[in-house]
Image (cartoon, rainbow, N blue to C red; front, side, top):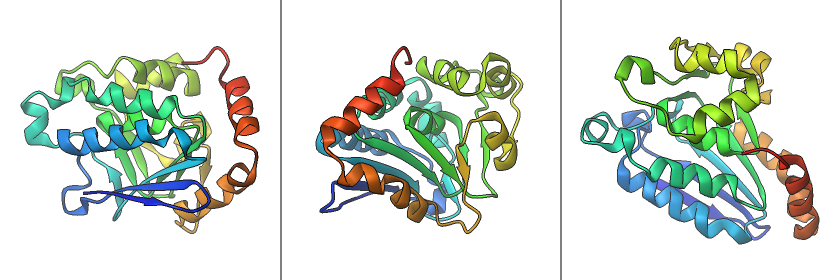
Length: 207
């Protein structure tokens, strides 16, 4: 349910492929994603995307009730993505919900299709978000807007998410992976030390 394609140019493309369940994530899928992210230290670029019309609905409901919603595997995954020296891009092919938002927040860039929506219903479900998610969200869109999503439970459409700064570009033709490839092109051909150095300078003082 997790597909990985490693390109000769150093670009890794990871696809969540469980469209019949809105790409909801099991513990096994999250562990596999974390393993991939931890192994991607030599990748020059990493693209995360989903199969079908939803990026991810978050935790698998049955496993969430059994404890997945509060598992530390979410933090392991987002931490591994944030630590990557190469360029990481969330190519959001559709709606992003719940704990799945953590991996997108940890990416360097977020692209979205026009019909995507963003929500994180922890208040309604009675869970705290993963510790780093509110901090990364607030760093992108400010504390008040982060509370609007996390405490107010608001579903934010792609256009508003772009205005907020939650996504960096809306891809009108829907080819978010193609757009991500184009954005990664310079990084893939550059000296990895320069790419790592630029990323470090941009992230100075951030989570």
